Length: 289
Image 1: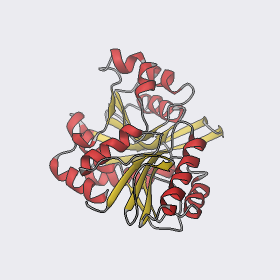
Image 2: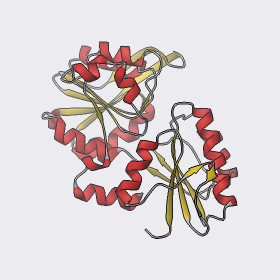
Image 3: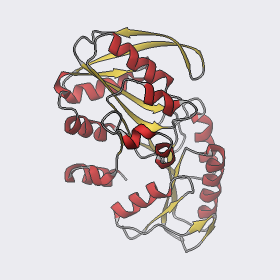
């Protein structure tokens, strides 16, 4: 790819390096002050919406502006944002920062400039088929009505059933009541969600599914924020496995969660990497990137 440059923000350099390695490119040198010429190049900036979110967003805006000023042909921000309420505001901020194109992963939101929203679904399907022996007897579960489209798509691809959980919140990050819509008796439950913050919803949902007759419960999450009591809740929950993508770095969280490290048979944490995919999937993903 002769006319493309990839640069990493400070939020998740390991993820940026994996993208560059897969495409056979070297990461560009930058710290807002650009360390090489980008004149006439198509510039891609990788910055995850995690950690110090406000700082990382501001750094992304500064980087976009710096590359445009340095005469880059086009600037695409590859943003792993995960905040549905503020997504429109973030979209507007990136647009006025002169980004030409946005690439996201499982994002809620709207942009006034071209956007490619990539999905974790291909990775989810592969992991389910290769790691859950009883997957043909599973039910794909959405922990809320907002994920209905996501779980129906996965269920259709696997040719299995799906159900929804209706929830009511007392306030942000605190679930008041949950109602299971569907029959879980003697079935394997696979909870699928785009993000998990304090994990109150998915842990409450797991208890509900076991009470309803599920034999096992798995959770598959795209963006794993795991703030506050999340790790403790997961450790105490009835999950067979919790699986996340690598859009957010998890090394620090794993050091604070003994069951991720010392008792993998109870709750293994699997970080998807592109090397995990079979050849046909890797080619499709590289084409998208």
